[in-house]
Image (cartoon, rainbow, N blue to C red; front, side, top):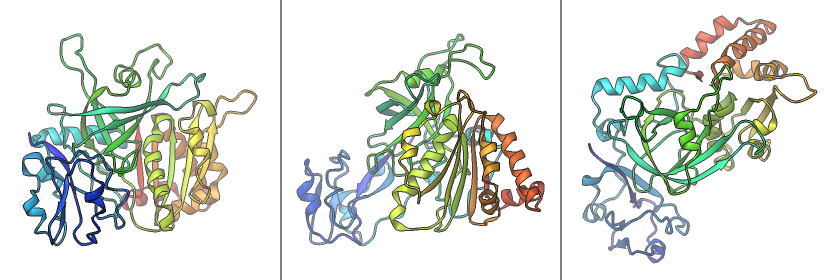
Length: 403
């Protein structure tokens, strides 16, 4: 297997040779000649001390490379521009075509099979690490994000990859292999989890990502059961190491073009990709790229809603939030489809907007209710949902990931 790593590089096109990075680096990993400033791969430990002081952002660059083919100082000193990124196929971990096909099928199972991403979505890296040859990440945070008296224990878990190249996009998933063996003595199988952080990481520039994980203590019928991987993840503490595979997923991706809007519908931990997409837009809010975010988020009560506090702090000019609670004492039950019907004028406008992309993520039972709400809204506006839906799918505007 070829081990992939992130190599820290300096963009010679925008570097102004101010020497700030070299002066800031605490381990003397940066040097220069009369032509370029360069980073020594053998020394750099990705401490990121040099990134903040750089006035142009030239220092904030990297490439995914095979460890044994990292760019040498001699090569970097000759550059006029950064080399192009290497494709996923050239850097993949060496799975057979059958393995790649099987893993892709697993990642797409919740969305009803293969689908195409929005035309402007960034190119995803996939299958860099397989269940046979996983990589390791270190837990740098594990925080409960539901109320402490709530029945649902949902965690926000941050994984750090250090120097290992593990690029992910909003909407992708990763595989986690819990330690130990089953009753037959075989290693536990991989479980998939959606990434909850944007492409530049939970903490930008630190090569990390986050997951939204619910501790499973009962099945969908309410019978007691202990989820193997969910409980393993929820019990992790800072410094623990985790076996990771992936990334996976090539279609549940967000559009990149200015003016694109997102209509997001989720329940529970289905909020993970929605949080990633929203955070991506929040970090770019100052760019004024236009486009609208509208979120429908369902839970039993406010205390059961992951990220509830964070949602209340998001600027209104960024996102239109609609919360549905089904178990609030002395109040009628509300589900996401009820909130969708309440906002039928805006929802119909977004369904018809060619620059709007729709995302559903959460429990399988939600899908039918949302489908019926869209059908009713279309009918009330003189449209036919069964005619519109194939058009949305054909233009990669309708994406479903339910489980």
